[in-house]
Length: 211
Image (cartoon, rainbow, N blue to C red; front, side, top):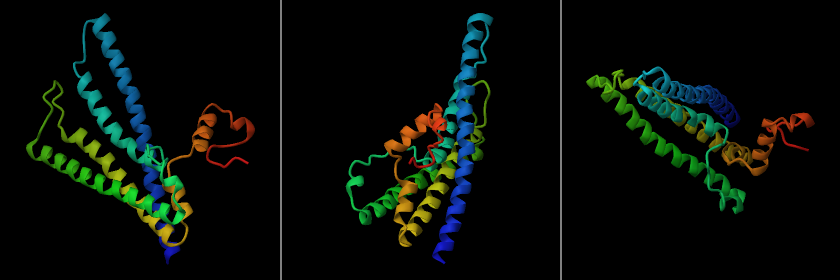
């Protein structure tokens, strides 16, 4: 029964993580489009004598929802900054629960944030709020995109917390730690080398342990 629950939680976590990856790529391309749009607007003002007059508005929206859309992917790849100076020196029987406490605290914080974001969208819909800029964008659209990223992030946190808790209960705390712990220097170095093709030439991958 416990192993079945772990498999189910792992499957759900991987599905949400895949969604987070797609959202993360969308956020990255959104930032690139922001840069291109700003460049075009600056050049158009300088050489063509006109401006879209919407640079600040659209890029602000893109940055806001882009950040929230990248959160889930960052968590699933263990790329968030964590202060792990002390926890690495703790014994496993203390270290594993501490990882769970850390993730639970993040879930509580994001729960409050998601609730506030959802209420903000509801309020904008209720009053038909729009931006005061030239485009008069209905505010529920950028706010809704921002909120969606936060909700996906919260769902992923809860699924990871459920899976990790079950793993610890099943005596598989090392697997839970591998899922939650910040990336090691070796992993980051391997990823950097793989990015420049140094490891592929030797037949290694950052996702596989080196011999």
